[in-house]
Length: 421
Image 1 (tube, rainbow, N blue to C red):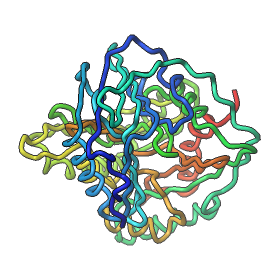
Image 2 (image 1 turned 60 degrees about the vertical axis):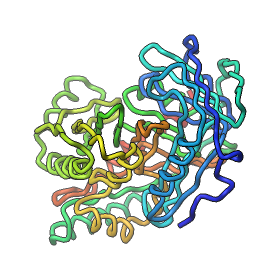
Image 3 (image 1 turned 180 degrees about the vertical axis):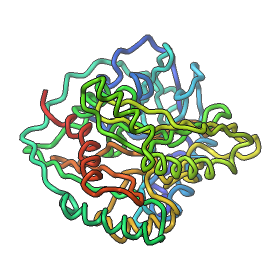
């Protein structure tokens, strides 16, 4: 475990943030320079950011608490001039957290420049240690170069070996050790030259508009799952568990959606995930709404069983969106049930370090409102190497071959985003 170092704190003990309303700047992803870009977008709305005004690195079992404490200190001492006053304006940070307690390497970043759009309003925020920060000129950037000569290889283990891991999990579930475990595998893409992350981000943003496209410190993707949103007292969470691959034929896909909605295996998996989210949020909410049955969420490559859980935050609770994300992580959708047994099994048999895959990623403002998703359909990028991740929920009647096919389908969004047009 590491605590935030003095170098992580603002040099003068406070930051100055100034938000100004602007005319619509056009496609937000096309504004990004290659200087430490950060992204949180859905359907063209959200924020893009770049530069680092301050940052905090944490790890270990206390990574969420340390990051939350650091942010409260920064926010309480900051000078904020916000002419817009809507979610995402003013002083914000973006963050990405490690899945496991060990090593659990995590980061919160306060950007230097943030450009946002929501419901027709657009703004720019400049953050630094100057009393009169200068609003930058915003220009659309040229399209980044496509990755060159990508070669794919297995990550931690091969597909065949992963099927054996799934089978071991099924045996242990049927022996009564646990009810569900989520197992993941990785795939490595290697290019002939360093990859500009803006290339896959643009493609994910346009092809998966219903998902949250994100990038924080080398972790990028397009997640369909909103772990938690906190906005002016309302708390919401979208739970996904239960998946079927699309065929591209509308009539056939509708029939598959109906099959998914009746599947006892998928409904069981989904029930575990919804229950874990509702139980984690209940202590922080005065009232909650948990739908009795899921709906089918249609994405370009797959369909999911989905449930939107909502609640009203306790006035006296004081939990920020990051605190709520910490309470929810890991949900049954990415860990399993019971959580402790499932996460121990993941560490024992999965065969890889998840890093920040399947953990909270998102943003937060000075009041503690914001959004954190689960880093799914995601990858870690470093130079010319990209490590892709995919996971599947394993229950008593899971079939290893079918689970491997599901994992392959979940690689598709990032894999396609790396391809040249």
